[in-house]
Length: 279
Image (cartoon, rainbow, N blue to C red):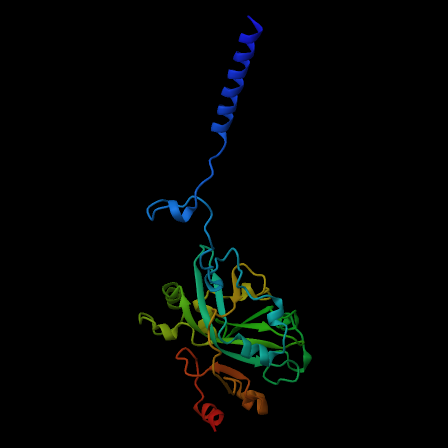
């Protein structure tokens, strides 16, 4: 082939390669606002993240709202107050979650407290949970059939009794558990306010028994505490005498029971204490 013809052929092949190369390059997209119609799907990343999921409704696996050990590491009285408004969660073996907002507690101060199981500083296999790190559950049995759940606080032998909850989730399951375990009044349907209005009722409704004794409420997978929902107002608190400790002398009158004023879920309302708080 003559040299001139070969040069022309080489030039044409080079131009073809250039056109092919340009065709393969991604085209520059015009401004999105000018080209996308309302009906066109947006395939790129969103311009901004949508509303974040509330910590109150976080799934049980993440436990992002679960209160940690630092929450429990405070003396019994401030801890008893701090419990009010927080949410106790119980996860059953089948994955069902039972939830209730704490509305009533009692503080037990340790060796000096004549009403405490640790009075005098005595430590036994039964009350050992009271002497363990803050956040440890102390579950004991009364009358040979009912359970009560306490949480250890800062200070040897000090703890907080959980007395009543406002049921928030799993109410039908709570009702079934209470109907199965309660004594007397068989056949009568329990009202919502009766489900968790007392320390033993609370344990029945959440299927809490002695197997929960000495568990860590800050780390357990079957029962834990979540902070109150965002935006919740600070509850008005009533300080009153504890219930059922008439044997404790002057300690029976000390205002170491705390409950949310006006809550219909409280086990025992003390009108005198409420009146004194207003005076």
